[in-house]
Length: 195
Image 1: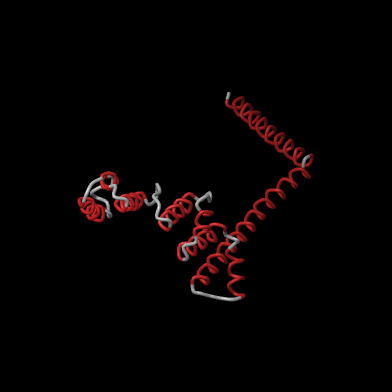
Image 2: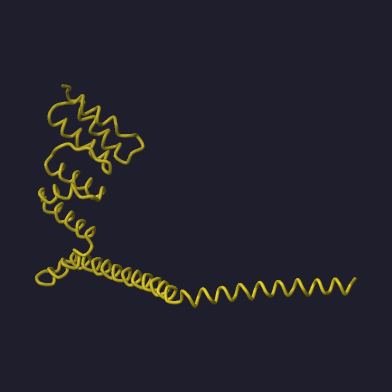
């Protein structure tokens, strides 16, 4: 019986080896049949990742150039160099818009602030609307400067003599806010009279 078991074991091993050899031959045939397609696929994958990394490096260089340009512009360069730096800065629309905002606030440029208040960047748009309303001495609702906007609205109401409405605006500022002391001081200003 042991010889029979050994023969069965050898047959089983040969069958397993045959199946492995058959699989290897099928794989080799598949590779030979589709080698051009497979080579094209490998080349396409390598090109895709190569182009992606080159594009990423170029974008990073543009961002770095824009950052350098912004720092240089802040240091007060003039003339042709300033024009070149502005050109570099325009490669980063977000940084260029931020630079425009800074200049507009410094120069009370309501036209630029109005334009920036419609930008897709919600932070810049909200900041521009708030700065514009401050320059024009108008009230505005602001997500970023909510409590400052409330103080501004209350101040404008106090100047118009609308003390009750001013107190309502000031009461919306929380006691734990950093602006609560200003709100309390302004609240005292509303005690002069009511309208």
